[in-house]
Image (cartoon, rainbow, N blue to C red; front, side, top):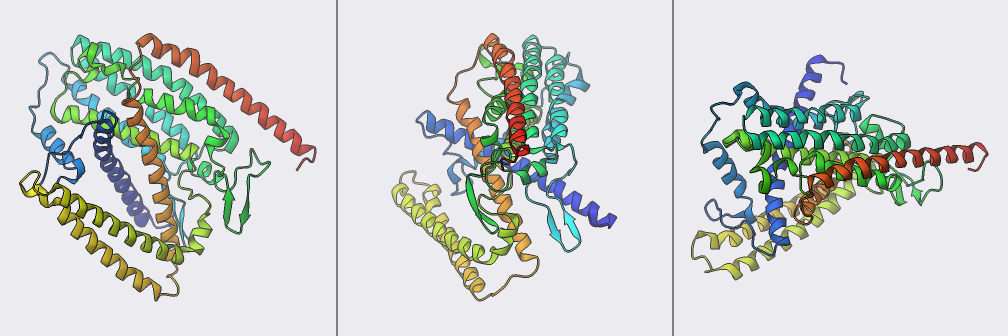
Length: 454
């Protein structure tokens, strides 16, 4: 990286903290998002009562309430449980969820002179293998939780879950073989780099045109090259994260709560957080493999650096307009809610409206200052490109994570025989067929090129 051991250690530590913060922040955000989306689907208000002073923040205060509840509940342990494995199980689930995210590239490699900083914690050549190897260890947390609890319902849930995870890991692993054949690499950052530019169908027939470092047309994303692989991968991801319609391991109607029936307080909270962190990691991997990862549509890294100053000005101008619109909307909300509760919450819309107006004024002043600047410092373009790529990655990841919530509150739970039939009799043959078709297409394309077809 830099050649300086101390500096390299500092950079790795900062990236580790950054990854940890992403997972720990995104998990509670997705919890609130799940409550809000489920309320919308079921035509009910959803979380809107917990508050800190005058602030309810559209239900986000429930994050604080959940944390207080989990930390203060009785920390119950069954008398006949195997205490070592009973306590180890939730730790394994959390560790696996955190470790799988170590190979995800959040932006292109930063270059500052002779110094290169990869934007992933572990920039290893076999990053995709790391993901599958670590993710497969998650079954140990589930099976140990069910067995060590000394509860028949927990054990039944653990047995179900272990069979489910093993069954769906096979089609998930096979589904990405087509991606590897298309992009010729196991390194996740190189897979993302290969998805930059125009969709060319394995090097042929570009669907668009280039204008220097900018391009117009369909992007060369994995979902366009491997749509069947994406369907298999996302279905297997639902099963791997024990999400409805694949939550047979903890089905309330049959097994109370499944493998974590005997867990309370933060021990349950660790399983709860591990599930949502696994959702974030699964969404990140899908973003990386099928939606261009950190690639910003139509702009290469060089283009982002070249046009960084006008883009910053445009972004600040749009931010001012958005903040003013939010402030106006919050003020109208305040007028509509005034007197409804007859307490301090009536002031929330007014206070937030004033805060947004203040932020709009500050942003406008910053925009005025940038208009007087004719050029950015040498590192400015690199920093802006990295920020834009971070933003692109998180928008894609957030949208994919939202589908986990949408599917949970739309599709009913499968029977266990249906779940196993889908994995072994449908997804597995489909994944094998996808590999065969991809191989034939690549063979025909290579033969066409060899004959001088391009």
